[in-house]
Length: 165
Image 1: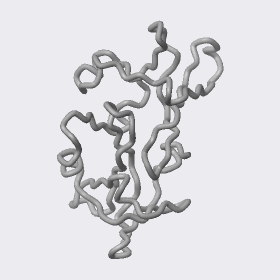
Image 2 (image 1 turned 45 degrees about the vertical axis):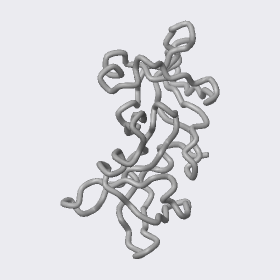
Image 3 (image 1 turned 180 degrees about the horizontal axis):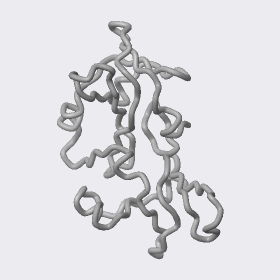
Image 4 (image 1 turned 90 degrees about the horizontal axis):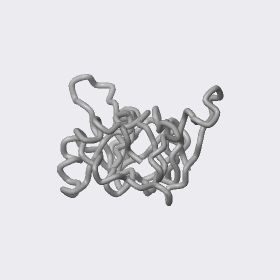
């Protein structure tokens, strides 16, 4: 398992051309299926724009580099995914309030634990435990207890509610 912070900054290398395509900038999350579907790449060339890779485009993950088969534009990635999926980058949902089943805020989303090869989210990492507010504690919530509210799946609704999980 890896955290998003562990995977950011890793070099992305093309298997076909043996060229460094850039570094992993963020992960792409499908909030409707609660799964990571790919990664965004920050390229060194200013004029080419951001690209992304699907999880299934990855050949191998090393400790400092990811070897991929192909990269796509972010627009192409969003067009390939199914229509009901809600694709967002982790930076857009970081620091959102996480509530329990009683509606009480238990912390803010700070990171995810996930399997980098298949995208399954294993746990949420939360900051800001309200029980002991003076300590900077992390709370880990197992993925089986995650429920995404249907009222916040759209981006506009998510901004209004400030809740995700």
